Image (cartoon, rainbow, N blue to C red):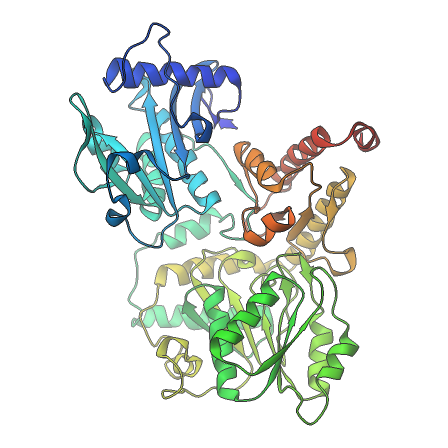
Length: 544
């Protein structure tokens, strides 16, 4: 919950707040827009009320504005517009925005801006990338200003006609920010404890907004070479290339280089992202075996070493450094020693360790990284580190996956983003402070202790705990999704919606990106309160 000197923006949770919502709903969609029939109670309960999440603006106990969002099909537009999906972009995660209403005398200020900002945070937290709305024809200019575009015919009756509209969430997020700059209102805050996208510093955001520069210009080439040099120093690597894409792309490029090896390999897995390396290898048609142990457990390196011996032994080994799913940090130094002993080429997924933990890639054949997460920049740049000379493979690899082509073209064979590169360069300045990793490790240890103090269980043991990410195994009486949603409503964005987290009733706190201790303390207070509310009386007494 956040606000300025007079307004409070929050998710509706209280009975009296819902009663005010029903009154404003009637006032707007019966009294002002004659969509529904009047009634003597002068209250209107929406037919999707039980499924709606309501964001509201309060002045004390006065409701000044509201908006609702829901993701369950059928949407209200399904009943109004046959073949709704035929109008919509494919492959998008959809939600429906409804019941946008602001008291008439407050329609030109921060009430609407605050509601829009709450929607934006909700879209990001829940992974929605396309929003639908039935826009009243009286306010089409406003909806267009928010990024909504009309589709299909008008729906509704005389005096209450609506235009079906949709908005790509990327556009909506940009408009939400501009709304604040126009009206000069303080944004309701949500604090990100997500592993991606992470909270971004002001200077990094400013760098992203600079005018774009041609990727063929001398200035851009100088910038990208300087950033590559800084990344190599940070990771103790010989070479790195920057590609437009995610950490998944970086792993695809690593796997594509292994295709060129035409040799058997071994993949280690002790969590979700180890399993994803197996999928990368399967999709690329690599020849490999898997050495898997239960999630959250360490590899028996003697057993790994035995698998590297023999006449048909693997010639490469692929593993995850920081297994994000369990917050488990695998032993990089030990893996390097084992692989060097048997002349096996070590390849790593360092997407969640780079910038969060010491990463020494000296002697590592290939490694994947990413601009977001621990580096604290925006997602969008895939990083591939390597310690050897690479040659282009025009007859064996797609152009975009050919690491040798990047090396041959000084890292810029195709159109690049000067904005993402500039933001990454700015983010790297925080690593000029050599105490950063030590401080992050200490902060993570403190968080782990506080979580244990309220009686919750951590997945990773202390001996293998990764900095900057904490995975909590919640008891059955604390459903992870419900707890995550309640924390969302209090302004704390945590990771809990991924399939592997839902299946195990786990929730994650990420300390990547910009992270102040006082904000972490507020989150822990809120989480501890929820844990105590759900604990059996005896357990609650012990934790108190």
